[in-house]
Length: 540
Ligand code: ADP
Ligand code: ZN
Image 1 (tube, rainbow, N blue to C red):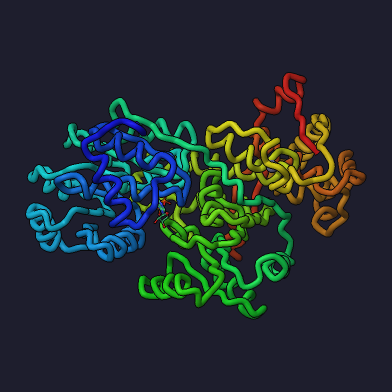
Image 2: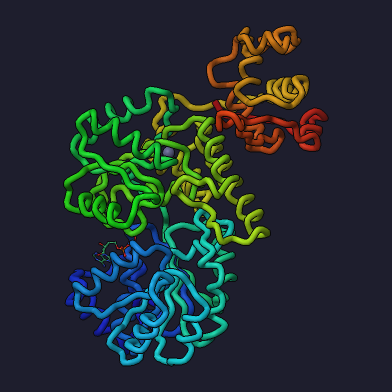
């Protein structure tokens, strides 16, 4: 696709230089354009900042007819339209928020070809049928295509019905683009969109200029963040991802008190407030944004020097993508993740109760009940993989992320740019089966009605009021783990949860609304542990 002679070769160069002001094409851009211009269905996996937009904007200019771009967020769409109009390229958008008669007007305009672009946020069957009546469709672009998969980290019900496009317009080429997708999500996308003999372009997702570190989260976390920024990124730009809108505001408030130029951004702010913050950020009036995942898609700031996760991300794909917003200019940038197991309980609780979700969304309300179960299951699995990632203090972070995204990466090439690779010691693998059995035994003998932190307390020999009240200080296993190094028992217990030996359910106390978790034994899995069929090895 690279060196072939195509009738549009010259135009391609011209538009890239004269309209978009680029000196050359980046990796795979020309190839993707040639493939989609040839009428093939194309699937592009390109890291954030790789230049995906150009691969459909240039074809839109070269082709006759309208390019339909499906995009998940109105803010993303508005941002793109603004850029296109600035470059004198006609563009408009449709969404569910626009009145029906106005939509028809827009469609009429499209027929008269004043507009080359049509960006659509919410997919409505009625609109599609309207589209069917005019034949000037050049190409259908699905941006953020991973949103179509229920197994992915950002499933959107709006995307669910997109398969209909291929059915209604079988001869129109589809171009699907994403910056993250595991192998199973990729398969899902191709199937859901009904792509035929599709050509896949993918490149490495490794970002050598990003440094990855996981740090245990304590109640000094905000002081640590302040210190980290002052010492490493003073007066530089960064994003701090938080779990809830409350967290965003709290973290921003604290950092502001420390003298940083900071603001917050989350889904429950109104449009005007959000635009205001985005503008402040673009104009460098603020350096740091404390945000939920609602912030970041399509944010084009090349000099973000750090991305800090104040809480556990919801999936490895999501984490990878959020980190990807740092260092788009290629300069060295830091990715810090503050991890505590109790955040897992919080995330899990939010996932299980989508209605009470606090501004960041995994599952949208319109999802039908049968779907919800499947999506929830996939979401929980994704969080568990993230817990696994955080608790791993031996393997290369880069390797862990890339393997998850279906890419091979030799940890030797990390060159000490992640916390695990930069450690001066090498790990040893230990058999912790015995310890695991003891913990399982404790869960059982205490009636399978206590939290993981309580089980760990018992194991370490706590003599707290509650322990005494239940008489648990008399148990044989009480205090057996007293002499273990810090964190060992909890790693083993969390591993048991991740590997499904022990199941953790979340309970919300009615009186205080506080969350607690309860461990139960998954007997069939545990049997294979007790019978010696399975052993548990961990690296230390
Ligand atoms: P993505 O959608 O893959 O995250 P974008 O399409 O937003 O990336 O592009 C990221 C940035 O790279 C934009 O500022 C864009 O102008 C710039 N860019 C894209 N292609 C080129 C190119 N060939 N040469 C120089 N800059 C480019
Ligand atoms: Zn590494």
